[in-house]
Amino acid sequence: MRVLLARCAVALVAGVAAGGYLAAASVGAQSGRVALTAKKFEFSAAEIGVRKGEPVTLVLTSTDFAHGFSVPDFGVRADLIPGKTTEVTFTPDKAGRFVFLCDNFCGDAHDRMTGFLVVTE
Amino acid sequence: MKLAGLGGIVFASSLSGCAGLGGRSEDFHFVQLSDVHLGYNNPKVNPDAAGTLQKAIAATNALDTQPDFVIFTGDLTQTTDDPKLRRARLQQFREIAGGLKVRQVYYFAGEHDASLDRAEAYQEVIGGPLYYTFDHKGIHFIVLDNTSDPAPILGAKQIEWLKADLARQQKDAPIVVFTHRPLFALSPQWDWATRDGQQAVDALLEYTNVTVFYGHIHHEHHHRTGHIEHHAARAVMFPLSPLGTAPQKTQLPWDPAQPYKGLGFRAVQAGNGAPRITEYPIRAG
Image (cartoon, rainbow over all chains, first blue to last red; front, side):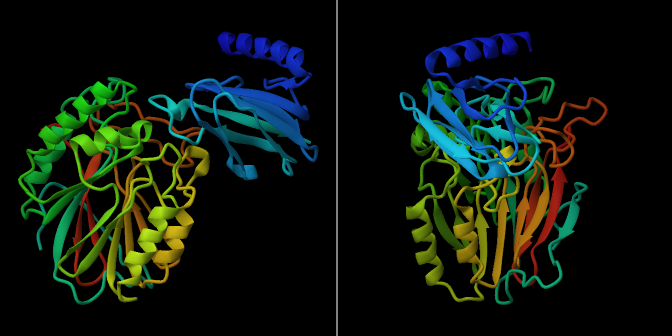
């Protein structure tokens, strides 16, 4: 967990410095632009905090494989092609804790490549 | 027909309103083995990973009546990034599977075998097409591939192929579909779905006698979409937590008090009437 938090903190700093994005981390309810990077076999954050009813744009990248990014409960998904930035925008219409995952099979620990979208009122 | 005295549990798939597999076929049975994951290595989940397939094969060989055929429904091997090791595992799998008494054995790939190289090694070692049909004693069998692309899809080309094949069948023809992943959206949150599987289900729904057998989820599960029944098989190598029993998809730990718990294979009696599924456990000896 410490490793994860440290990585998230780095992502937060890097994300804000790079383009003023909110970092993808367990930073409580946020909306706006959220940066998230995929690599075998993890996303750069285990949780993304957003607010119900507020549009959010996920700014998605991959470093090593055409990972998928999917939040099935909101019908959101994208293929993350290395070297390209993919943006998906949606407005969460329900509060709760929802799984996001890589849904393109990427290797031995593919099943562990999951996280949670936490939507608060 | 007596299948075996190995303590199998019969699941009569004659749910209300189900047409079964038709009324003009000849009775026979086949065996489904799934999710062998040869090369898997986690002693906390299966300390006999190197010997479990052999036990499943010995149990199949010990059936009182030998099946007409055996089909392995994907994930023959545990995935690896190493192409040489992938081929070695597939070769080892093939050699062990050669110990089956029954000579008619069908195979198809799971994502662990095929997704990382689009089935190149699988086709080299196991051979044959990735999706295909065969007919046996009046039943039309269709094997679908939803694993040779890293994305869990059938793809437009295969769906068109399926529709063309179905167009040659009578509407009440007995049809059995084999696939690795569920065709319906059992749980996209756990990667238990085929992204374009509904297109296949819609095409199959036009036929009155269709049953689907699949693997991937590593436990027994039965579901209906309209009049079509979908039956997931236990795994040979390790069990996964059923939906609703764990917050995330989890490999269930080995229970020394009940070794091989949750592992197994099944025999399916087909022919006239509804298919009868007999689930068999894998045991120590």
